[in-house]
Amino acid sequence: MTAPLLLALVLGYFALLFGVARWAARRGGAATNDSFFIGNRQSHWGLVAFGMIGTSLSGVTFVSVPGSVGSTAFGYFQIALGQFVGYALIAFVLLPLYYRLRVTSIYQVLGERLGPEAHRTGAVFFLVSRLLGATARLYLVARVLHDGVLLPLAPGVPFALTAAVLVGVVLLYTLEGGVKAIVWTDTLQTTGMLVGLLACGAWVLHALGASPAEAWARLDEAGLRTVFVTDPDSRHFWAKQLLAGAAIAVAMTGLDQEMMQKNISVPRLADAQKNLLVMSTLMLGVVFLFLLLGGLLQLFALQAGVAARGDALFPTVVLQHLPALAQAVFVLALVSALLPSADGALTALTASTCLDLLRLPQRADLNEAQRTRLRRAVHLCFAAAFLALVMAFRAVDNPHMIGLILKLAGYTYGPLLGLFLASLLRWPPTRPGWTLPVALAAPALCFAIDANQAALFGSYQIGLELLLLNAGFTLLGLRLARTPSRSA
Image (tube, rainbow, N blue to C red):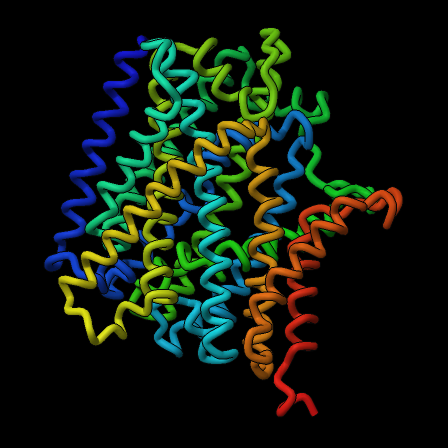
């Protein structure tokens, strides 16, 4: 399929998204600040559950998880199993707390339990975490679309233009509707991603000239079906990965305003819990399919002499070796995988800034129109930050983005996990002015340990459990800095 036709399909898909977002934003009344932040608490749990699959996986999963099979076989499934446990913890520990306190921003829990400094600190760490994670995901898809689709059409097109168009699309259809709109657009986009996954897998299987049973046997012969790593010293040891997966799910979903704003937009707690449990079950199946696709791609690369590896493997096989229709489906599925993460992140960053830092609903000096203008200005500022950080990731150009994203999460979500654990344990507030320094010191200490692993631990390697270590240091710091009046 020619690059102009692929580009036309992408633009048509963007137009469809605008139409769905506009309809959803106006559905049930005009868009307001409350509908932007939590959808007026009227979202259907089934739509939220299905749409959250796309948000949780994103374009990085679409490209990077299949690419990881060449180096770690099916080892990523260890993390997925741990995440399943983590989602259950969110459903039965965190969600009841959020609904009982009727929060709009989940970081209000920190303010209720640990004081306003903890509230602000939690919000700041979320902003940093989500901004880095979302722009890393956005960069990966922008790179594939630019290098694989636009450059063949117009070799002189700068990457900055591709990135600006993608950010602009997300900005335009989230500016008014917020959560109320993205619950529906994410459903559409998750459908597109899953259809693309299944269709591309079928095309690769056909290109291999093998039946499903034959391909499954060939994966075993190539050593690509291994799930559990049994070496305790390895950073991929199964117990470490399961524990890390649970911690990642709790931190990156349960303590993340982007993910929880959709859950708390559901009217009833029981339905929100049902949403998470259904989503987590579906996620296991979807991750397994991505890994299976990755195995098929590895077999095809060996058979056809494809040199690409890592994140480049899936796009290279589809765009250079599969038929035109497969290329079109891949590009649309890739865009579908990108946007649920980007639109939710942009909306959540705006919501957290307005609710936690600017305290917009409490501003008696502003009327509703002024609050709306301020919220739009914040939204525009974050869109500009998205573009700047995507360009920064272009300079780094890491070939394995999912590993980079999970590593960053270990540093940025660790303090959030520590703060929420302290709030659940009902610890007394820290001394004034100490919460933020403690939250900054914990990841700095983890960075020093990570950089000197060989000297400190010999052959033992710390992997994604760095997140738990970070949370532990945060808890220790909060304990040491608690208020003197309650320390006895």
